Amino acid sequence: MQASELQAFQKQLEELVTQLRSEIAEEDDQAATVTLDQSRVGRLSRMDALQGQQMALEARRRRERQLKAALVALRKIESGDFGECDACGEPINPKRLAFDPTVTLCIDCA
Image 1 (spheres, one colour):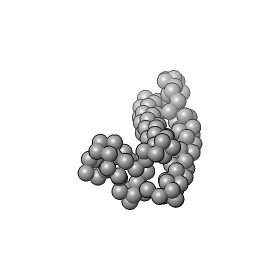
Image 2: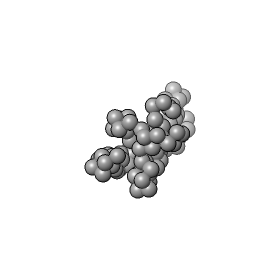
Image 3: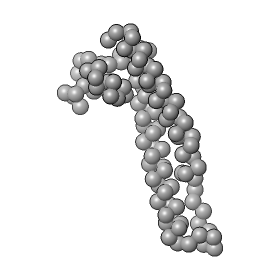
Image 4: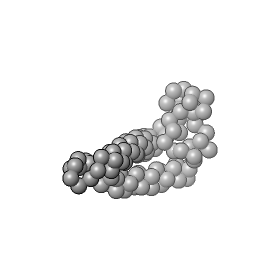
């Protein structure tokens, strides 16, 4: 893989990391503990709030997994292993990496 391609992937990954960190920070309010004060909120409103809280927590977990994968990909760029399949060691198609630079498997192994 050429140096210019690696720089482009590195930039894309760094932007993804910044975006994900920002989104995770914004979600803290949505995933906050739901108050179960019967005098303030009705039963259905609490159920709605609990459902919203669980959806926010799952979205946060998903973003945290994406963030971890992006950080791993950045470390692979630094070590020179970026673009190699974790299973077979063959190069991953650059078009596949362009779609998702966090992939770790070639199309055959995926």
